[in-house]
Length: 253
Image (cartoon, rainbow, N blue to C red; front, side, top):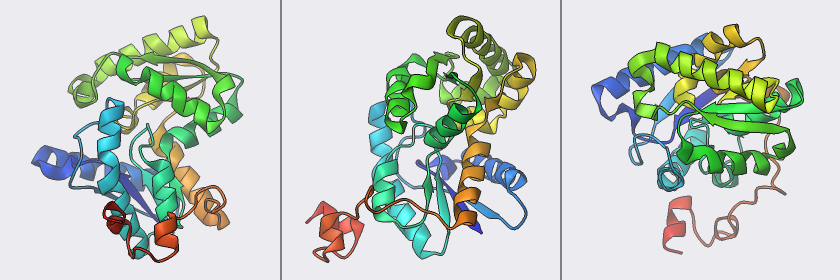
């Protein structure tokens, strides 16, 4: 099977960003099961990181267009490379292959592993949107808390040990004060730094890395021959009726 990890922003526009893109691609290959080809690609427009709803919305148009192209290129599933799942519904309207949102997939898995889960994420600016995201997934009653390490996305890799310490501290508080019995790292950059794996060893509860979970979720859907329902995610009417020939033309229809 062929699965593409789609970064909703121009990560590779600098040499350092390109190196990080390649590093993440190598990790995804390690996570993949036998027989899975996994690729990684970014998009040319959008914010360098997503730490607000405005940045999330800015990332969607170019990401949606690239998703259409990836389906045409023969990829069998797409992982949307941001924990906030920006534009997930829109991408599902435009393509027929499975589109996996790491935030959605991690929440569904966490809900099956315990009674209450907490999300450890970056900054206070994403707490409200993360809470709303989990309610929309349908497992809001199981959300114990959203806690933050207080480190912006683009600074997480500067001091990985600091990020681990902050994650352990907030994870422990989530367990002891919020009664969480499962934890999720609520940021893909934290996922690719394998913060969940490092902190989980000290906390004694399942700690989900959304990069791993999203890939395994994608493998499961492709392996089972499943994708999203068209009764839930309708093709845009102008596109479905032939009024426009491509998603890009919807801007002018």
